[in-house]
Amino acid sequence: MGWIIALIVGGIAGWLASKVMNRDSSMGVFWNIVVGCVGSVLGNLLLNQFGVGGSVQEFSLTGLLVAIIGAIVLLGIVNLVQRGRVR
Image 1 (cartoon, rainbow, N blue to C red):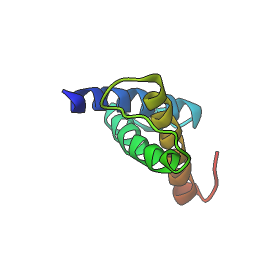
Image 2: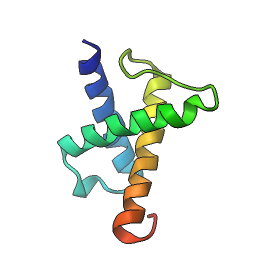
Image 3: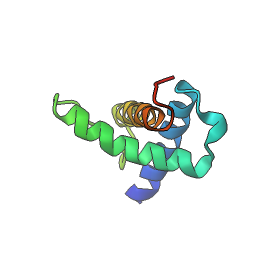
Image 4: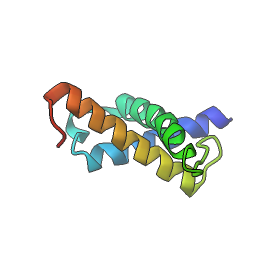
């Protein structure tokens, strides 16, 4: 059951991150979920170094915030690779 919640939270985080980074028109639902899930892992790795973390397998606002931050960082990296600059 936890992986279903992780997919839903990942999709929401990916969608919100794509809105913030202005990439929503170039991404579909599938890529929103992928970016959100990978971003949540990235966010957990980065923020666990500072003692902040949250799991997306059990819905919490901290986990959602960490997933959004990680997805935004991931989209920023993708922008750098694709265009050579951050939007």
